[in-house]
Length: 381
Image (tube, rainbow, N blue to C red):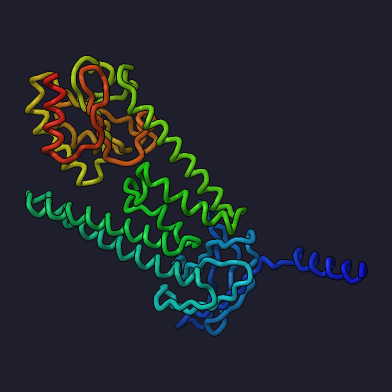
């Protein structure tokens, strides 16, 4: 009996130790008789080439050694063009058929890869809509079509809400899927992420907890955990920041468009507004124009604006801010501007309204009528 038990344990041990971390990829590229395709794996934030396949009669097969026992992102490219995106797990036997431009993509043998194909398609469709609406908005702004600009800003807002709702629905429907990762880290442009609000940390935590239950050693789970910790740290900091009533506000000092250093603290004792914005975003440039009317109405009551431009092109910034009569500053460091960290800014534009005591009385109020009312209130105190 002991001998039988020993043999059984030995078999189980060998089976456990020999668990394969390989996946098989069979690739067929239409309209390609001979050529080479590159297979790469995503290592969190960089791509590593794992194999270069020589195709004969358009086909090739390869066994891939996966980095670990969890799913990982793989990409197939031809002549520098990405033609297939995959999520491969140990034991997967995937068949991919595609052409040299990445069209007519067909995937079988990997549910995650098939789902990723749909997610990527939805993201691409949404991005095209965003780019189209942005171009139209720029054209309306240039010709002074106020009604057209208003309508397009509304459509952009509705698109953002729909895209975010779709991503959340996907997370709820597929809680254990790695395809949620491209949605969580999606950006419409460099300064416009889909998930950036403090309350969005709950979605990172939801995905982290789900994936951790199945793939505790995944490198992506560890990254998600760090994101969750960062969100909660920011929430705690924001809570403390918002609850400060009598203490002085954090000071910043940056060069203005005349190369003179300007301190935010010079505005202490008067009502003022602190703005962070990106000059490459037409909607944010329009926001400055809308704020100008508020400034002109209340500057006689001591109201001032300290405007921080987040850009690396100081010449362009200087050209478009000369018309604005308030304090305009920019250090040319773009997203590395230290003032962003000082005020815990995670998305642009960002707006803080201070009363005469240096207390923040409102944040991120961009609707003109509401903002004007808030400024009126601090100017009358």
